[in-house]
Structures are given as structure tokens and as C-alpha cells.
Length: 249
Length: 224
Image (tube, rainbow over all chains, first blue to last red; front, top):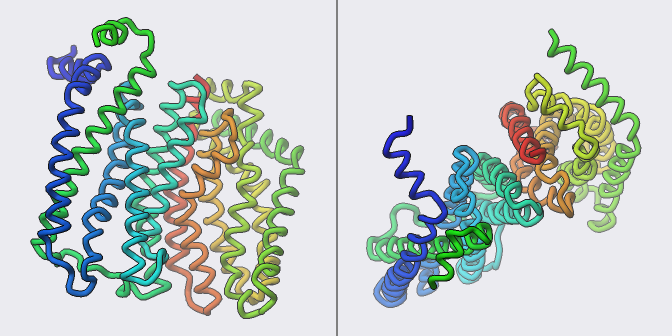
């Protein structure tokens, strides 16, 4: 009693089919992502206006804000893929989730580092215990925990599923952590000090920001596909379908 | 009825195990007191300053000390096959884990809780605040041990289990630390800590539902 849609989905999510498609698409994603990235970078560095308060230093925002968005987004994707793997017993879900983790961790680190560099001229300190920074730091630890569990368990299939539990528990906790960190910050110091412009951002700044986010998304998709292929090759090592494809190349 | 019988039998067994390995409790207690006595050596003996640090020391010491025994909660049961039997049992594994947690909490966490008033008093916390402080610590540490059991279930049988446990569990302790410590600070400033207590209680209810389920899921994966 399996309908055609399920069969189609099963086919798409089977490692051989995914492997073929991912290998084909990854370079194109990389190319498109790079083109948009360079365009967004040009827009951000030359075309968008400097901030009237922060001057030229505001331009790091175009790297910082998309990184922070991606770090959260990729955690949700990672946990979602892991959940699919756990619930539907989809191997590809685990592979995708494993591929997302280091990329997400890298974006988190990028957000922290660019934030720190941006913080020095604007706030006068490399690091402040601001709610957002702290949430980001804890998110980084959550990523490390996930990667740590994956690498500490010898049995790979076990590692997949245990790490999925870690990712899901983390996913439930992220809103609570986010909320409590905001509570902590507003209790101890005025919330208005580090407030950015919020939604009242100028359209000339919003366009490169969104363009950069798009570039980040496509680039992470490319990295994720490549990395999933590596994971498939590592895990499905010795399978006949994989061997025949490797012989072809 | 049968379920109750099985649970009480398990509870008795777990209490006995905690009692037999009571050295663990003393290790944790000693560690807690050590940490608490190291802070003044680093900060200096200024009473005003120490009073401000009291909530932080109580909570961070509690977190560190309760991490120690957590790493081995399921170790023996995992190695000798008890967990396999628990999994095959008619009662859901999550329920059995909840029983395990109860024994662990009463046997190991309550002694730590009983020491914390003395730590707080040594930092100049006023005596009248001890009762409300315990009221905050009780749900807070309950959540911490519940989350800790999930971490313990995930890391049982892995290499460098305790370091991994800290990495997995500590980020999840952040909300408890924030609300718990801010509650103690509010008390010290003679304000109401009802809001913090309510947050802790609600998080506790959530943890009570999710944590045993997650720990059971992790243990089932471990046992495959």
C-alpha cells in the first residue's frame, strides 16, 4: 500500500540516487553561490552607504549578520535531517545532518569572530556579554557537543542515532536558552545599550544583506552536498553501486 | 498495581546501590566544598565582594560537583546487562529511568543541596534567606540531574565519557544557571524571586516529560 509519491521520495532519498544528483549539482551550486557572493560583496563594500554613526565599520555587518542567521538555520536543518533519519530510518538524513554540523559550526565561529571585530570599534570591546553573543557562543558549544558525540562513538550507525538525540534535545533547548539569556541580559544591564536599528534598516543596506544571505545559503548547500558525498563514500564503502560509479570516474 | 510493585522494587535496588557506593557522594561533596573555598582565595576576602559572588559560587559549584557522579549513572547497568533486562521489561524504559533518577536525586543530589546553605552562609548570605534559596535550588538541581541523565545515557560506553558528558550537558544547563542565580541575587537584594521560581518549576515540568523519554531513546540505541 505504498503510493507513487512515497516511491518517488524513497528513490530520491536513496544514497545512490542522491549521490549522483549531489555530485552533479554541487559544482553548479558552488559557481552560482560564488557569483552571487562576489556581487553581494561588491555591493556591500562599494555601493551601499556608510552608516552615519558607525561609518565604514558597518560593512562587516554584511558578513556578520548572514553568518549568524545561517548558524541558527543550519542547526535547525541539521536537527531536522537527524530527526528524519531517526523517525523514517533514512540513512541520507543522517549523512546530511553530519554534513551540516561542521558548516554550521563554522558559520557560528564566523559570526562570533566578525562580531568581535565589529564590536571593537563600535562598543569599544572585543567581547561583551550581550544576549545575542552569548546565545551564539552556546550554540557553538551545542554544535561541538553534536560533533563530539559523533566522533566518540565507534559504531557509526550508533553514532548517527545518538547524535540525532543530541541534536533534537539541543533543538528543544535553543528557544529556552535564547529566551533565558535575554532575560539575564535585560536584568543586569540596560537593553538599550547594544540595540541595533532593528527593522528600520535602510533599503540600500537591506539589499546587499539579503543578497549575501542568499549567497551563503547556496554556498552552504554546495558544501553540504559535497560533504554528504564524502560521507556517503566513507559509509557505503565497498558497496557495488558505489564501486561502479567510482570506476567510471 | 504490578507496575507500582516493579517500580518500588527498582527504587529499593537503586537506593541500595547508591548507599553501597556512598564514596561517590563524599567525593562530590568534597569537590563542592573545595571549589567553594577556592573562590575567596582568588577573589580576596572582601565580605561585600564575596556576598555578591555567593549565588555564582553556589550554582557553579553545584553544577561542577553534580557532573562528577553523573558520568557513571548507567555504566554498571550497561556493562552487566541490567539495562537489557530493563529494556525487555513490560514497563516503559522511560518510567524505569524516572525511578533511577529519583534514587539518584535523593541519594546524591540532596546531600549536595544540604551542604549549599553552609556555602552560602560562608559567603555572607543571610540566614533568613536560606529557606527560599533551597526552594530555588530544589527544582534547579532536579532539572540539572534530569538533563544530566540524558547526557549520561548518550555517553555511556564511549571513550572519554565524562569530558563528552560535560560538553553535551553544560550548554543545556545555561537556563537553569541563569534563572537560579538571578533568583538568588534577587533574594540577596531582598526582592521577590517568585518569577524565577516559576520559570524553574515550568522548566522542571518540561524536563520531567522530555528527559526520561530522550534518555530512554538514547539507551535503546546504545543497547542495539
